[in-house]
Image (cartoon, rainbow, N blue to C red; front, side, top):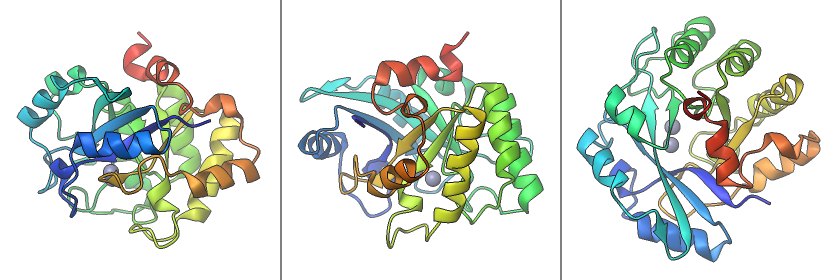
Length: 239
Ligand SMILES: [Zn+2]
Ligand SMILES: [Zn+2]
């Protein structure tokens, strides 16, 4: 049973939503989601959240209408060496950081360099969760990525917006299926994220749930059933 959505944006990330944290919480509650991870874009994107924005979010209530609220970020890889657009001070204060490749911040440079950039981010402790690694905009060496995630204790995100029918990222189901198989093979934990901008898709994991079932993916490797389990699995919390 999935009760946690790890990847959600509010109006602070733009993208045509005016929904605030409370609107996301209300949407979550109406769908039986008990915990939400607010992960605004960091400032490398024009519509990103500033560092002072992240600091303010972290002072916001953690319990809204009975729904637990985690405050993370979706950081951008900015260079081939795995540098990201969050200062260490803010990175450390957040509950967790999803680190992603986005065209606004990192021009796709072919499979080898794209993959290395994410692996460097893991090794530099600039990444708790790899964001949407099945995005075909950035071809990746998925076996190398999953092995590096295992070595660095990093979690892999399975992103519903990448597989949803008519999703804004196109159809990334073949890459997502490969990723699911590799995580099963190498025993790497995953977390599901809707990547909902606003409340519209919060907690909707329809396509991913079907794919995980088809692949007979072990339930123990999915960290959406309990936020304590998710938090304990983060590289930052593993000492
Ligand atoms: Zn993203
Ligand atoms: Zn996102």
